[in-house]
Amino acid sequence: MWLYVGSGKCTKGTLTRCKGAFGVPLGTWRLASRMLQLPAALLSTFRQRDAGMNHEPRGYVTKDEAQNANAEMWRKFRKDFQQKPITYGAILVLIALAILVLIFRYDPQWAAPNNNLVSFLTNTATEVLGVIFTIFVVNEFQKRRDLEQLKKELLADVKYGTNGDAIRAINRIRLYDEEYGWYSGQNGLLVKQDLRHSNLENANLHDANLEGAHLRGINLEGADLRRANMEGADLTVANLERGDLRGANLRMASMWRVNLKEAKLEKVNLGGVHLNQANLQGADLMQANLQGADLDATNLQGAHLGGANLQGRTLIRANLQDANLFGSNLQGANLIQANLQGADLREANLQGAFLDNAKFSAKTNLPDRRFYNLEKTEEQMLIYTDPAHPNFWDPCSELARSPLGSPWYCDDAHELTP
Image 1 (tube, helix red, strand yellow):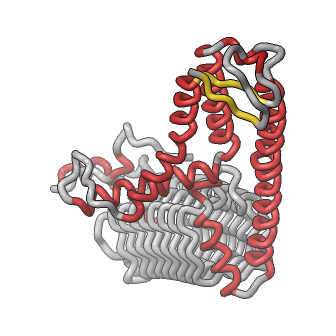
Image 2 (tube, one colour):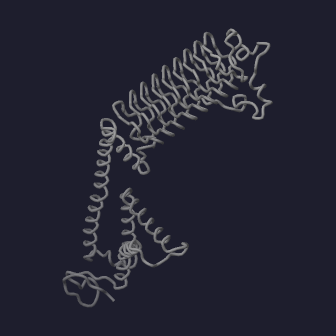
Image 3 (spheres, helix red, strand yellow):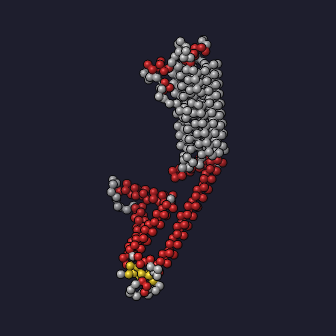
């Protein structure tokens, strides 16, 4: 049985007897209709799921769990379609082509030269290609242009806006991180940016990628910089007072005269950092890696440096008054003219350290838990620094008999991160 489509009149017989119309086998018409109705059926199903139908798929304990799962699946589909319109558009085109192939395979007479359907399909294909180009190609171009404009606006707010503007912009950048990697990605928006005029006081920048950023003189007082990547960043004379930098990467950063008063720097990687004349008064540097760091004339008064790695560091004229250096590694460190009055040096490794003209007080607690004797000369420190001294106090052997065993720096397998 044939179904004739068009305005002309047709008689029984082949397609060549029809004028102004083309014929379609009824079975083929039904097949095509059902396949073309498939997207509408799927859309209707999704809408019904969003509306909260009573149908409960298997595998879920309650109806609410099933409805939430269906709603989440639909949201994910719409999000993926918006993010990758070209990909999904190509899929839809392939589905349409597959339908046409099935129809032509079912009845090869459709491709006959004298069949009006050929012209119809040719015109339709041209229109479809035009729509696809307009929707997907032009839409993608517009989307990219909008994203570039959004980047410029967000960076302008961070660089030149008020403190409130900058914090709001940072929060918006974080929202786009999962999709575009603007916040913590390798090519994030803040990487190598000039932020010298920014006011980021109390900003939340944890996990942010600030690698190579220009932060000279920036106000980051009270900022949350946990696990932030600031490798190679310029933090000269920046204000990081009371900042939280736990777990942050500051390797090879420039921090000359930076203010880190009462900052949290526990387990921070400060390898190779220039901290000349920096203010670290009361800062928490427990178990921080300071190997390769320059601490000349640094203010470490009252700082917590327990278990810190200061091997071979330059601490000339450094202020370590009342600093906690319990169990720290100061092997080969240069402490000439350093202020160690009231410092806690219990179980510290001073082997090979230079202590010429260093200042001590009766409250300075020495590695063997004795206090500094002001009635004696500086030579009393040789038993901790000179392995050739007859009474040399080796912390690795002396403390091996203690309940806690040898300090961490005595472990031959321990690797010091450069």
